[in-house]
Length: 91
Image 1 (tube, helix red, strand yellow):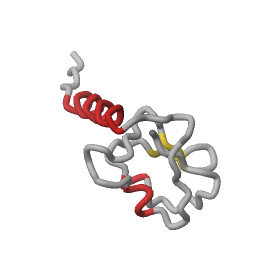
Image 2 (spheres, helix red, strand yellow; image 1 turned 60 degrees about the horizontal axis):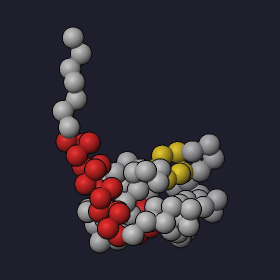
Image 3 (cartoon, rainbow, N blue to C red; image 1 turned 180 degrees about the vertical axis):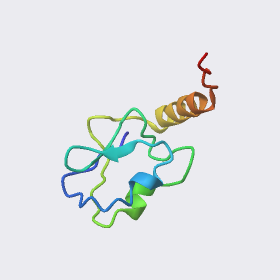
Image 4 (cartoon, one colour; image 1 turned 90 degrees about the vertical axis):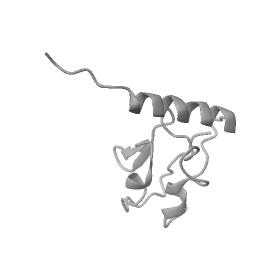
């Protein structure tokens, strides 16, 4: 299950650099989490780092993106494979 930043976010900027998958970015008004990239830190940490550092407790699980732990592991491995793939050099 991906995580979600609610409108209680105070834009304190502490969550974005903690995300190992670069799933967090600034939205129109508050930070947002890309559910395609969010693995709840599976593969990196025991607990979601954004939740750990959030001072206002505004990052719950996103009920619109329910995933089993096994699915999060698959997503983690896919993201790691993409990150490790060589980038083509322009000619």
